[in-house]
Image (cartoon, rainbow, N blue to C red; front, side):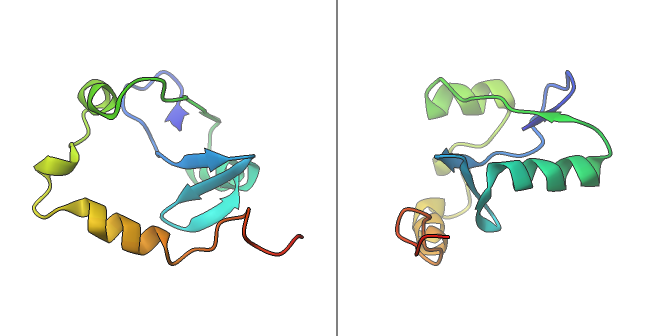
Length: 92
């Protein structure tokens, strides 16, 4: 997610079938955008990541997993596993 022509991303999230996963768990992508636009007071845009993790981190000035104090992958997996993905949830 990006505001205008700013270089740094506002927010990074994963998607699946119009659902978004971020630090708040699974939400409709449209609701995630609405909440961020409301907070920012301006329109935000979607930037699809089409390069490797290393290239993304280099271009967007993000740390690679090995640059964190401790291995973030186990913490990330533990967090992700706390949230039932939409494809496993009961139909709405």
